[in-house]
Length: 80
Image 1 (tube, rainbow, N blue to C red):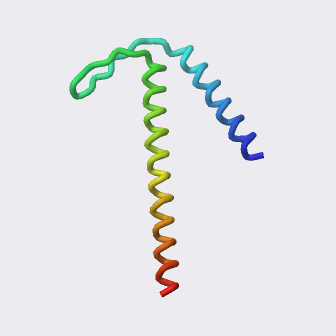
Image 2: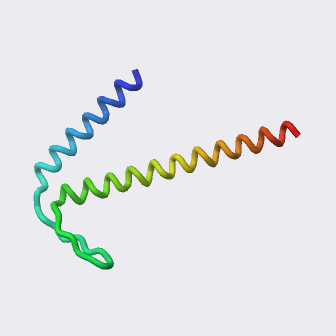
């Protein structure tokens, strides 16, 4: 059941992203420290959403590893 809800949620997000992208085709200039980049608003939002998603996944994995290490340390201390 959880899988179905997740798939429906992802499809809805993709549908919203498609509508947003089709409505926002204006060009913008992104100024980086060393370069400039011309892209559409939809491309910029998509790019930063993907970057944010991967940063979130990274922190989630690090958090889970930290919690697992703490749990193992407590278990080892209880054994001693």
